[in-house]
Image 1 (cartoon, rainbow, N blue to C red):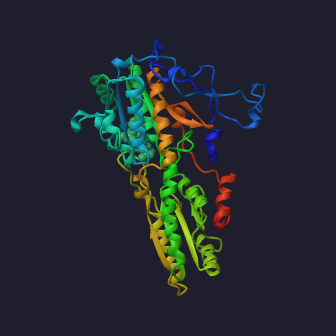
Image 2: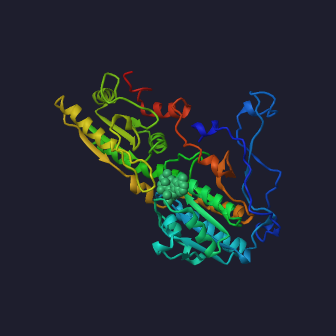
Image 3: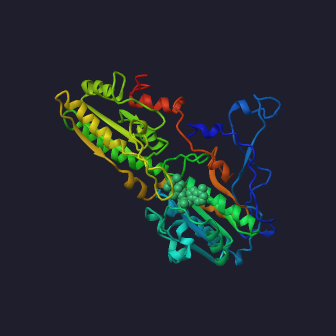
Length: 442
Ligand code: ATP
Ligand code: MG
């Protein structure tokens, strides 16, 4: 889904660092190795097709390295020990990624030991007292049937030197870090500390974001499942709204800074009449404001379904001023304010709406991945292992232009992806909801 500014990020250096030269014959892949001459174009639009680099109109081609097994690897499989950690909030597919990593290490490379670090980065800190989990094929064989992460997760800052001390002590060769933007920043710094100490430990990132807001993860794993699950809530809201006089269904979905779940759910359900996202500010009151537009809709159709992303309308509230354990700003609760404003707006006109407020956020986060995401997560896990075994470090595995690729970590942590409200994508959302382009009074 190319809808936002990640396609405009100026990508210059796509080289992936290595901890050392790959000299060992790869025991897996039956000879189907990636040709090192192959590369995946970062920008496939026609204006870049020339690629001569002679003018601004024809910039030089930039490529991402394709993912997949290499003929030569760096780590000697029989002497390799790997670790997996999951950080940040839950997202469908975490267990599928863990499972794929473990199965590929075990069956593809015969790596004898894979350990799971419990409860995010806190699991590295000895004082916390969390044991490591022995991730055997038996242990992971059925974990994909469940949502969440078998390893647990956490937020909160941890001393990066303590993390690298723990990796050294445990004799880890490759650490797979599954998490959001914060985790990828932490991963980058762990890789720096490893480099500073001259150690041969690879850090492989697997970007996770239920909001689909990480650059160059298009879409991110779990997003498809989230949209599907949000759809169940929206369908419920629609049935509630159409089953009562002056019925309004209000559904709150995740999306702190980017409204992808709200927008994509609106597109997939087609029953949504208002999709409110952080990228498109609006007024509540006034002749062009949301309440006036809702009023018109109610008079015409007698019901409405509203989907609101958690980060929408923040400018209409006082900042909460609070942060979570990792320093992320806590958002004020706009959906509740919206509910109250709708009710008082109509009550002032002597109308009592039947408003049903549904918040499926935590259900969406914790369901098992759907078929699409299961397949996607498996590939991410498999490719993360192939890359890690070659000694590559400080990168993430992602899908770009339909191919699995390696992307330098600093590219994915450079800002966050947002919906471009000038794009055809957002226009399609507006067309499907019927809401005006702008609900601002100006
Ligand atoms: P989510 O998508 O749920 O926000 P996240 O990975 O962004 O996931 P965070 O809680 O922000 O979740 O970060 C995960 C872990 O990474 C936390 O333990 C946090 O302290 C650590 N972390 C975040 N940013 C940095 C950073 N710049 N340097 C070092 N550690 C960091
Ligand atoms: Mg985050």
